[in-house]
Amino acid sequence: MDRKALPAPLASLPGDGHSYAAPRTPTENAIAQIWSAVLGMERVGINDNFFDLGGYSLLLLRAHSRLRASLQPDLPFVALMQYPTVRTLASYLSGTAEQSVVPAAAADRARKQREAIAQARSIRGQR
Image (tube, rainbow, N blue to C red; front, side, top):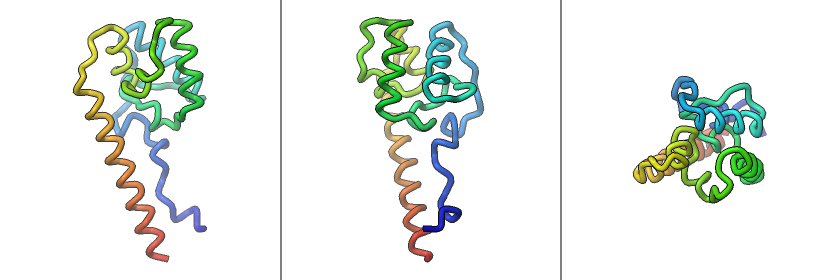
């Protein structure tokens, strides 16, 4: 396999292509710090998606444990999957989350995954 011919992984594109936006509230700051530690990153912005930054289920469990210990003991695990950005999770924790944000984020993530798969297939077909 020619690894140099592969497209850059989506995890190398923090924030879904958005520029870095610093946490604005204590809750956003706490979430960003926990995600930074769990993901081994220097900083995480409020629009960064946990999964796009390279997060996966085991890391999500670690983040969930730390979030429950520092922010909300009754935080459901599924909320971290439903609200994958610092901003949306902080909104959920404060009770101001928009329900329409979840499907939009999921649809955007699915679109990016389909594009990456199509690009990988086209590269494979060129050989």
